[in-house]
Image (cartoon, rainbow, N blue to C red; front, side):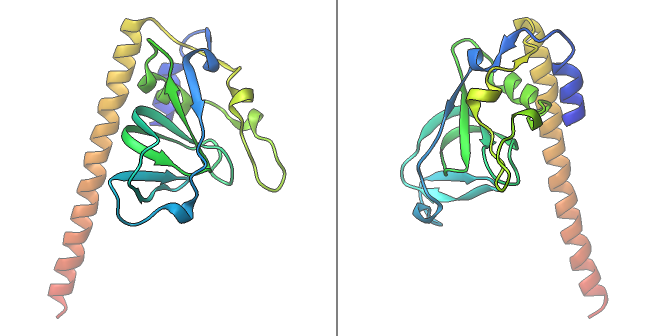
Length: 177
């Protein structure tokens, strides 16, 4: 997926800075304030880590790990949510496609922007100055639609593999009773 995203989102000359199309938001929420129950999901560096009764943002956003071993890892969220301090969430400025930017960042090289010896960090003030290719609206829609459909198909296939694996385990247990 990352290779295809790179091929499609890097097919032109970089023409827009990230800070011109994205806003970066952070959180002070700590992991010990998260519970196993609640109305809204809370995300951390490893994905969903729990729930809370308040949300920080509602809508489309790109979650990016800002420190630690997974620095630069991305997720796309379209819901009410909160994040803990190891993540930033990026939102699109007016008239920019957050989903296209997610796929473009999926192929983005964050390595030159990583700082810190013991614990690696990235800062939006640094990588926000980088440029990426932002095509016409029509082309963005085509690219986004294609990549989103492929990603959804991959999710279906992964779920099928999990289901078939569980079925195989069950059948093998029944065979050797």
